[in-house]
Image 1 (cartoon, rainbow, N blue to C red):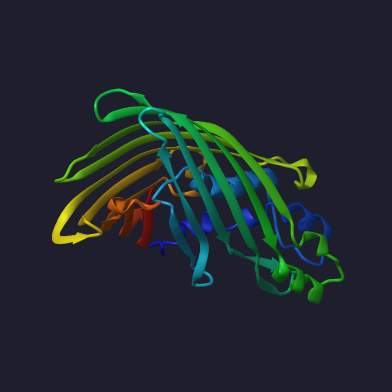
Image 2 (image 1 turned 135 degrees about the horizontal axis):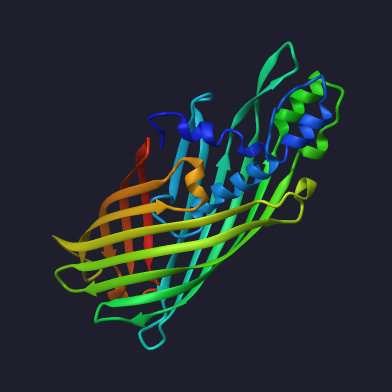
Amino acid sequence: MPPNTAFLACRLFCLALAFVGNAAHAQLGQRVKAIQGVDVQKLANGILGIMSYTVAPDVTTSSLSVSNAATASPGLSMSQVGGGFTLSKNTPLYLEGNAAYSRYDPVFLANDGSTARLVPVKWNSVSATGGIGWDFALAEHWVVRPIFNFTLGYVASDLAGLKWWVDNNTDLDLSFLDGRRLKAYGLGGALMFDYEKFAPEHDDDIEIRYTNVALKSYSDTPGGVVGEAKAESASVWARTRVPTGWGVVWDRPVRYVYEAALTEFMGDQRELGLKWMASLGFGLELDSSALERWATRWRFVARYKFGPDVKGWATGLAISF
């Protein structure tokens, strides 16, 4: 999903240096002046800020790739898969889960006073979020749903490019930088208003959600630095499903799927430049509920996503149980 400008790549340019910054600047001395004026605390917060985009299940950030103008390749990629469900009307326990993967591939300039080289630094982030809630009926088709959320995350670095350059241009041993990692956890919650109406002529779903989860790093942080970030967002998501009139498959009509979503990022995500994202989707759905199988509905949806200086396309496959 390439941006119109390089604003996001520039804002995210130094995030991967959170653990490299102080060590490289202190030990390379006069030979290599790689990183100047690095605020390690701010950068550690920034790494968790990237993770905060994928704390809550959200179609606007479920698949996102931002190109790095310097390398013409994706500098930031995010993917997530997840969902939620209520057990039954008699037991309105709500459960949700979300797993996400992010890859950040920036390049930075290492300078030894006479020559400068672009040095790649790669970071891989994996996170998982769970949620437990309860549905309280407000009206025939409306429920309010408070949710408790918890997150575990892991960020690992692959500094092979930096280590190769230093090994060939200095006498220093920076093997301790390779494989640097950051562990994080998050606690918080969400409040959701959910509308569901199922009828032969059309099915309608609307979700209005506010999420607030505080992320914090623990263990294996150099210099005792503790990264913190607040994942706060407000979102609206709507979907309607209408019979196509093409006939039936598996004893149920094939349906058109229309979808729209808008997410406003209100926490530390705003510091990274992406303040909101929107998504418009269209697809088809097959209903297998008449077959009494473990899955009841199968959807393929193509989505157009856009935000401040960011736009692109994504496709998704969803299964309802």
